[in-house]
Amino acid sequence: MQESQTTMEMTLHPIGYVRSPYKKRGDGPRQGRQSDKTSEIVVDPRYRDGLFRLEMDKRLVVLAWFDRSDRTFLRVTPPGTTVEHGIFATRSPDRPNPIGLTVVDLIGIKDGVLEVRGLDSLDGTPIIDIKPYIPEFDSPPPAE
Amino acid sequence: MQESQTTMEMTLHPIGYVRSPYKKRGDGPRQGRQSDKTSEIVVDPRYRDGLFRLEMDKRLVVLAWFDRSDRTFLRVTPPGTTVEHGIFATRSPDRPNPIGLTVVDLIGIKDGVLEVRGLDSLDGTPIIDIKPYIPEFDSPPPAE
Image (cartoon, rainbow over all chains, first blue to last red; front, side, top):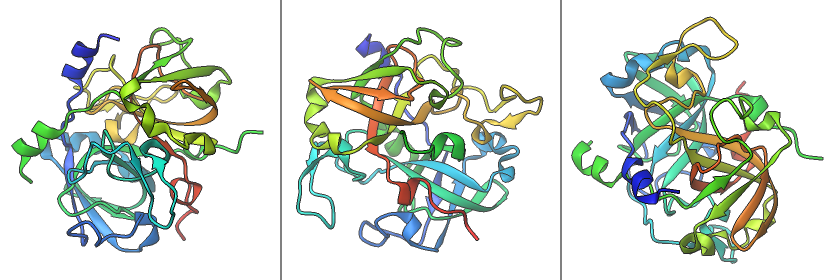
């Protein structure tokens, strides 16, 4: 791997940000699926053309950048447990690349703003990707 | 959003890379779940402590950086269709932030190398995150 070259190019561009009732860590549920509250994803005008036909999808995968995370942790004791885990064995927002993955329900899209249910991101969190949720790939049957 | 500040900090660090039988675009299946071939994720020694207890998980979510993608596309016509879609309504690797999301089965871990089934990434692809797959969050029941 040509690390110096790869690292140089691995810079994310926010495609939008979250408008949420959750203002700071501790406000939100542990995972967005545990709440019925709705949030908005405000997509930057430069990227709105990428939303074409997205309204056909009812369920999305949203990737967010946890901009208030500590990237130095390699182990953590998850909430509700007393056992230390490596960071990659948890869904902690404190991780080397603090990318949050949430499956959300799409309620509607208007003027580049998505209304979604199930997003646990804090208000102002940068959004880095939106994908259609495809059950065949994203919730495959258990291996035999 | 304080965009200049946020952008400055949104740099990814590869935590490892893929060893795969797929050497170039076109070699792999459209999605890794369509093949039984195994791949390896070689985790960088600096991040191996983050794998502690990961062997308890049989299914993982892997985030990869598609380093051979074109980040300028906002619309594409997905394979097998004749209809143009916005990039966020597709799983194309050519997207503003070319992050691939794949659900894989963990076969084993040895000396910081994960053997997995279902990964569609090309040989040498940087890996940026590994998370446990949690059905409650990642394959929620359909909204009513």
